[in-house]
Length: 299
Length: 117
Picture 1 (cartoon, rainbow over the protein chains, first blue to last red):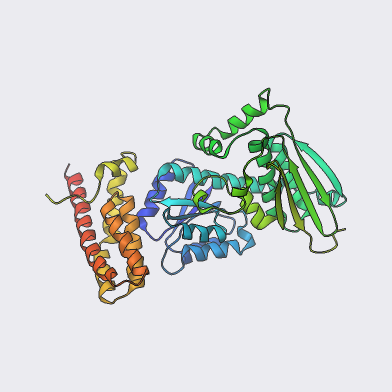
Picture 2: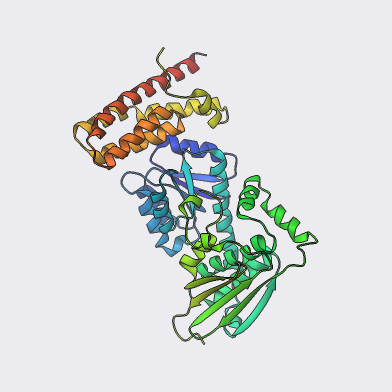
């Protein structure tokens, strides 16, 4: 059962969120300002799976809570969902820059609230799974200088991202960034699911089913993607190729406020911003190289 | 009969027709926002633009959630004027306080009727 911390100074908003999330199997805790929320988080850093955070509150506001969460490694795996008025792109941009990955437009509606909470919890689960999968491989990987791997499924992609990220000093961020790139290679590249289609599939709750269907379809079953890794003294580069038609990658390199309220579409920008020292797409967009600079001699 | 501030049909639709929840929500609003008109007038009298912006922001959210679009629009205008440091924010604040009082009366009347049914 996921425990969610809901932070809002308006009692009626807390009631609306509790009502909309009821029957979903979540356990909710409430705080009426940022100070109270921070006290609850500090008292039990492992307790909450996600935080739904109002922006404007008395005493400590939502932006300050967000900054504290992002500056504290104990909360690395806790996604933050910011609530704000949809009409204020500057506020959204500020929140995205401070590390909020999810946005809820006020006044709240039941469908978007549940979809965003589901997406945030899925991300947390994925991060925890990545950490678990990556244990124990570091030494063997340290001896690798050049290798390539072929993969077809999201499970294989996840395993690769989690394992190879162990080579990097910022392992958690690289695991997340690399998983975004390899997932894109499978779902958008090889399987041809467009950005809009993914939104519709997530909304209908049939995304996983569609992935399985396309993986098994005769015209797509033979497609594979490749991850090539080159480890040098000062850097590690990951090149990912897929067999899809590519995409207009230019629009996804930065966090776009107009996509902030969607349940997906931030992965590439986030990977570029926090995981890699460089991220370069080539050609029609089905080849990408991500590089991590190493702090010193990595041998 | 005074013009209604709340679109009751839209409010019911927003909360899936769950009347018991709507009644509970209204009781919460009456409990937590009863003194908001006085606070607005006090902020305006004290020329406290930061307080005005904060209260107006709160009423903007309330108006949106309760499908009171007139309140939401005036609150939005008041917040913008207060943030920009415009004098008209104080006049808007008075209008907003009056409208909020009407809204509270409408909500109280609704809950009275629900109780008497």
